[in-house]
Length: 279
Ligand code: DO4
Ligand code: MG
Image (cartoon, rainbow, N blue to C red; front, top):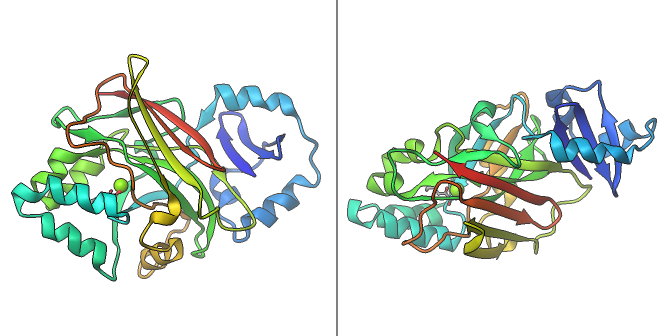
């Protein structure tokens, strides 16, 4: 089922039947172990109202409250290759190869909700950067007890020139206003997401496609549970946490985003996240 955060409350889409849960706050609603079963119980006393689709279409917010957003890096071979290329002049090429091979994954803090935008909103590129890309990433929702309870689509917007100049500049390349998009919903199921699900990225400029790419989530080097286990080792998340799992799609090195580009990311089972670039 799909859980939408909207301006009118939480809306659940279960097999195309829509339910409004007015009395719940986002954090207490999603931060529950066995979320699928819990929501199934919540819906028992409700009748569907399919006119709610209008609210989903007009007033859909990013599916986040007080959750932190973290991200994993260099989890696909394509990301390893791109990172080595951009950092080679700074002597950082080998550094990223080591991250890919290492037992410990790269995990970094990305954003709090006020730097996150939802479906249909603007993501930003930095004014002090000349080389920017979207990073389309399957994003886990992990509850405060450490179990994966859902999935969403994430865009880990990145400034490749800043990241490539020096690996220690990574926080500036990754975390700035509107550097993160999540949505359109939180997908909650009674079993893990299909391992063969495809992530697709399309970028349009002036109504022409200027880049498209796709990858299956099963091409990731690490397991979802492994990333979650490292994240929770010495850090607690009282509201649960979002964890972006890394990108396997990187446009060619000559490509950079421009203002007004439209970024479209889809993941089978979850939906489509569309954002326009601004500065
Ligand atoms: O190591 C830098 C960040 C990599 C990243 O964000 C990714 O692989 O998705
Ligand atoms: Mg990334």
